Length: 173
Image (cartoon, rainbow, N blue to C red; front, side, top):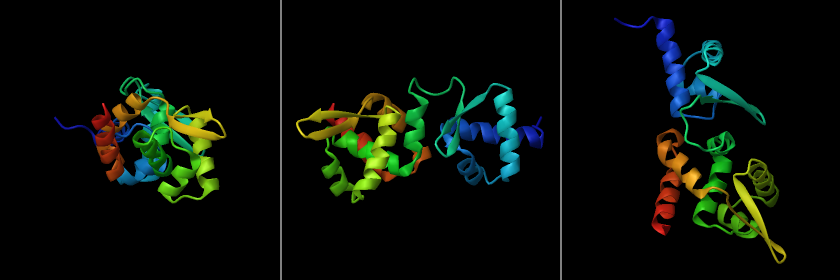
């Protein structure tokens, strides 16, 4: 017996949220190739049924499956879903204790942009800052949790940097 088309569509939306925790509406629309109104309808139904939940993240509403993600804060997923923030986290996994200047140089990023991204990561408790003398040193708060998320959801990030950061982290141990 086949599912009704509406249930198939809802299953597609749900499966995409499960495989891409922290996904936002437009990204979900792109991945599923479903019309925006259809995606919204099924997200609302899935939330009412208690299968997923959403959290506001600055400019996005991000969706997560209930009870299906590792014991890692949703802010970590939200940060890793954003390419620019993920790039910084990946750099810090490979280079813990980096300074603002070394990150700026290595990532070829303007100082103000890097400062903005770091303040977002600090506010989400994904990155921590340690003062040493006159310099701030940055590192990932929960390296193991971040690596777990990257390993489990690697295909959903489609990022070669993820693979190299995981390899470097695992080689350090």
